[in-house]
Amino acid sequence: MAEMDMHETELNKTISDAERDRRVAAVSYARASVGLEGFLLSAADDAHAQRFIDGQIDLNEFVRPRGSL
Image (cartoon, rainbow, N blue to C red; front, side, top):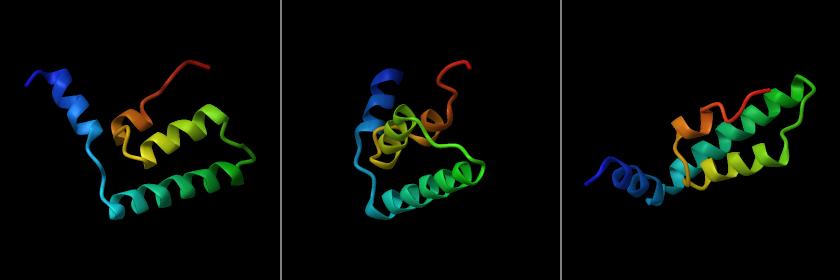
């Protein structure tokens, strides 16, 4: 299987309920931490976090910088 196909297959698999719960807890903690610093996530950041929670992207893609300031 080609590397690209393998990566797509890995991302398309369904995550377990326990993994989804773990991701929800991690994202909620991060949102609270950012909020305590006085910031809010943008709509794009919220959507990106939801893709991680739903198992559409893995942790490496979730934490990868997505653009420059």
